[in-house]
Image (cartoon, rainbow, N blue to C red; front, side):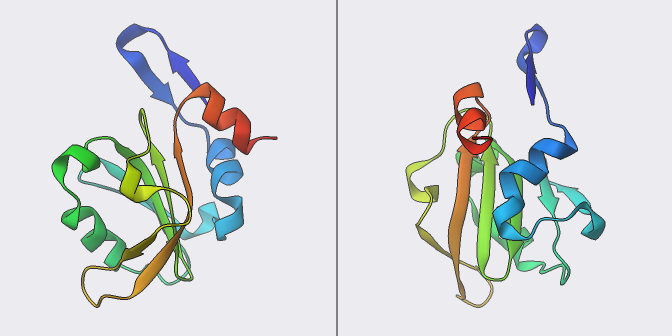
Length: 120
């Protein structure tokens, strides 16, 4: 992952996503969607409740969310600048449609220090 100084553009490579979400069964084979400005990385069952989760987020959080991935009751987030308190690793989050709970297993900001922590 690299930051391009002009306009603070963030470039995310597929290898970055594999590194960040490897503990949550991420595979590029299941595809992705851009939904309301958030990249959704799908797992094998394409659980659309993740879209409901994005819809239910306050705009202030959604505007800072880059990537989300849900798999097997776990959810991971990649944020632009900082991780909101309610989306920290270890927190539980409810799927809006049915109240099922998902464990937040990864939630990082797209900063060099956070990415370095993941790649150790």
